[in-house]
Amino acid sequence: MKKSLLLACVVLFAGAAFAQSSVGASSLSNEAQPIVMPSHPSQASERGMMSGKSLLTGSGSISAKGERPLWELAPNNVPVPLGDSARVVKKQHAEAKKAQVTWVN
Image 1 (tube, one colour):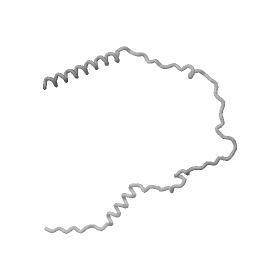
Image 2 (tube, helix red, strand yellow):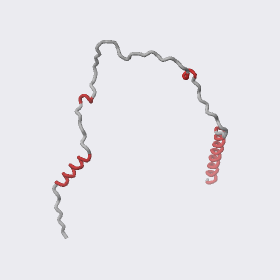
Image 3 (cartoon, helix red, strand yellow):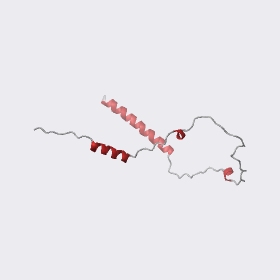
């Protein structure tokens, strides 16, 4: 049983080692490869400026229906800083009734 398990492991590991060496050798080379930049001659040529286009529409009134944004309707709540909250809690803790400790030996 041990011999067959050992033989199976050796076969699998040897197959993996041969697969790595054959793939790695064909895809990597030590020769320098020059960087080839694509050429775009139409982008680099000189052209005249286009005429301006107006972004304003013609005269007339514009109306729309829909929901109003929340920032127009919601009240502006200012959050209480954490330090102020901690001071209030500390003050409440100091003013709270303390338990009386009675030791009985």
